[in-house]
Image (spheres, one colour):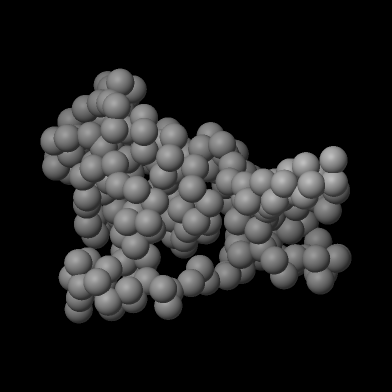
Length: 226
């Protein structure tokens, strides 16, 4: 019995920071950029279809990987879209989602297009990469000197091993906070009674209360008039 409890504790510790993808994946193109602008993050758009086998496998494996989730939930805003007739605004023009696949070069699924928060594309990859490769891609996109080195060299030289998630504090107005909480499933009002993992974007109603308990969180959001 004691041995069984030890195994259970190890298993729980292993998966404690892996959450269902619904907890951080958005389904709306423009919502992703609105969240990115509020949180100062880059955007990853996954061009997908409901029946794409590689897309399904990617969501079952790579998106559930703990390290991948840490990066996607703190440094990026991740959204998955299908080629539907839903309307998106991209760089001032209206496009149906289906047309965006063509405009942004998503000929095959899954294709991942990376953007700055202002909708400037910064790169794209096609294929359901395993966690260890996709993690390197995320770190490369976030690497300040990526215009000086190729992705292949970045991976070969293992530069990603020296790149870590950067904690940050974001100051927003009350209306901006309300909008962010509404749009982003990974943004939560902090409550010491609730179990929130360190990769949740926490909104602090009173940032000076229990401040010692907040060091583990990477993204803290505070109302700017406090």
